[in-house]
Structures are given as structure tokens and as C-alpha cells.
Length: 85
Image 1 (cartoon, rainbow, N blue to C red):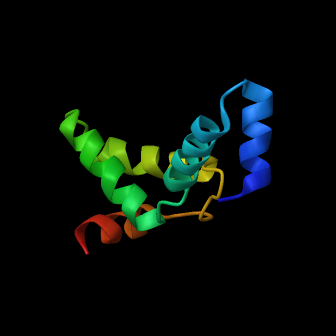
Image 2: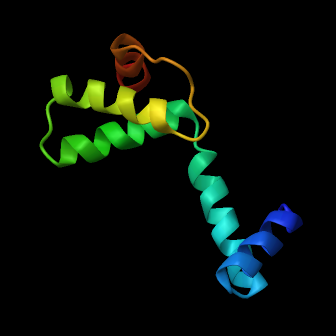
């Protein structure tokens, strides 16, 4: 855990340090998700909302471009391969 980051979050938000540490850990875990895990999770979530693959692939590709640690350009073919193998 990055102690300096935890202190910064605690000071700037007024959160107690233990709560700030949990927030930092949650954010790190969220952004620590691999590209493959993220693609599979988002595909599953969007399919559960009755979205079709022709809507899903461009959306996931756009989301990946906006991630804090973006994986670079990801083609629809690669997205399909991540989900379906």
C-alpha cells in the first residue's frame, strides 16, 4: 500500500486513514484488472442487459481507450478472442 497516497486521500477528503486505505485498495484493485478480465466482465454485463455483440465490441473498445492504464488499441477480433478463446 502506498502510504503517501493514503495520507493524501485522507487529508484531501477528510476520511480517516483506515477508510482512505480501503478506498485506495478498492481503486487499485479496480484498475489492476487485466484487459482480459475486464473484457470478459464487461461482455457478460452487457449481454445480461440484452446488448448484441455488434453493439458490445465497439463499446468495450472505446471503454478500454479511456481506462487510466489503457492497453492501447484493441481490435474487435482481439476482444472476441478474449471472450470466446
